[in-house]
Every structure is written in structure tokens, then in C-alpha cells.
Image 1 (cartoon, one colour):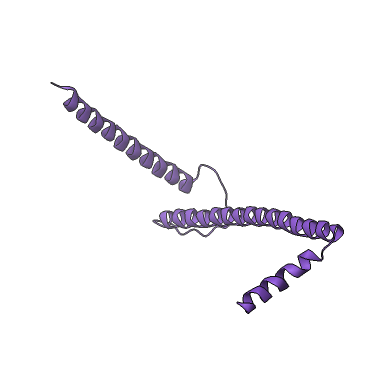
Image 2 (cartoon, one colour):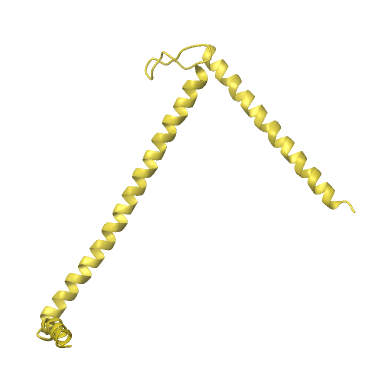
Length: 128
């Protein structure tokens, strides 16, 4: 028991001897530390989120580029780079437009078929 009282006495002694100036200084230091830490945590969290968003954008861009390159290698090899690429209504562009039209048509047909299935389900439920 003597150890506990000795510990409590040594812990409270600096606070008992503290005057008003030292108390205010301690409060300012602790409060300033707390506010600065909160601000730093918010800033670092924001910066980390921005880095993750940027990394995700780059990853998606690379993934889309890879899918595009894999899809175009059917008949021709992609030998042009960014500065050498010519955009227009050439053979590759016409092929890409046709592929996009086919994908759009398939998507519309799937959506139309799904809507018809939903109508049939609702019609079954409405009949008495």
C-alpha cells in the first residue's frame, strides 16, 4: 500500500507546486498540440485520398488502354505511338466505330429483352 501512496504523491506533486503561469502554459501547449495534430491528420488523409484517386485513374487508364490494344490486334499490329498516331476516318477508325455500334446494339437488345421479361412478370402478378 505504501507503494501506491508514494506513486500518487509523486504524480500529484508537480501539479500542486504549479502556479497560474505554468498552468496556462501547459494548457496552451497541450491545446496547440491537439489542434495541430488534428489539422495534420486531416491534411494527410486528404492527400492520401487524392493519391489513391490518381492511382486508380492511372490504373483504369492503363487497363482500358490494354483492353483497347488487345481488341485492335485482330488484323493489324498497333505500331503507331502517341505523336505518330493520325486520327481520322481511316480503316482502323471505321473498324472501331463498327465495333462500338455492335456493342451498343447488343446492349440495347439486352436492355429491351430485360424490360420485356419484367413486363411479363408484372402481367402474371396483375391477372386474377
